[in-house]
Amino acid sequence: MAFMLAAAGFAPAAGAAETTRVLSLQSLASKYASPGSQFVELDGIRIRYRDEGAGPAVLLVHGTLGDLADWDGWIDLLADRYRVIRLDLPGFGLSGEVPNGNYSIDRMLSLVDGLMDHLRQESFALVGISLGGAIAFRYAATRTSRVKSLVLINSAGMESGRPIDDADRAEKTSRPRNDIFTGPVVTPADIAEFYSAYTSDPSRLPDSFIQRKVDFLNVRGRDEIGRRIMALYERGDPQRVLAHVRAPSLVLWGAHNFALDTRVARQFASALTGACLVELVVLEQGGHYINVERPRESAGAALAFLDRSAKESGCSQLRDCLRKGN
Image 1 (cartoon, rainbow, N blue to C red):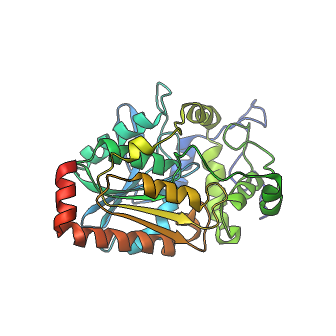
Image 2 (cartoon, rainbow, N blue to C red; image 1 turned 135 degrees about the vertical axis):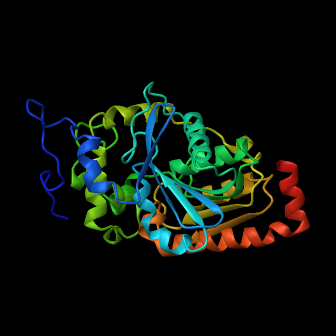
């Protein structure tokens, strides 16, 4: 992918060093705020979201480096039968910053409450990938009456992950030239190298995807936001939290997940001891970001589970379990 910073829309402001992230959200809005984009201010934070389709509601929560367009490949499948809601988390995509710098998962949970209250959606299915998975399962564990179904895709939040040794790294990718979360500026080569480590087939990521990530990461202040998110990130041991989830739950994993292998998927499934229904699906083709790399396969697995759990909600065992949780 032969990119130049100019092609990615990056040009230092007058008097600014070339190693400074200087793009503004306003300058990117005309490029990325599609006609379906909507904005709402929640607790002083400007949040972008999209609301499409009709039927039972499903909220999609993106992961690290993500934005709501990461779910584009899911919409055609889901929106035929579901009301699909997706957002840019604060500090990502076209959403604004958190004024007091609190990017903790608990803060994200209250923002989900605010968005779904704004949309007058009392209960809904919840889907989260990577960091979004950690937000999703903590939300489901603490708002049991709101979450009808839960889908965790390559979820963050487990203490143990796949050990990445030098041989692994050398086989998959060279070390990124820059820390894309906290470094001074992000280039297309940085993004391409990063995603080559977390997808089984990087060629499936279009140039427009790489450029979108470059643009959003070079927004002024996103390096500081990256530092704050990393400092506040709560991984720990989630088994106790997961045990409080009552909703039917799907753990969806990519077999070629460079970050977390399928052992972690099994740990998640085993820890959902209070859920009414637990399923584990591993996609043989796909890495960490399977919603982007394998959208139809991952959306198909999630859709089948959502349909199945909705149909089975009438069975006595599941109905009793939901009643106890709610």
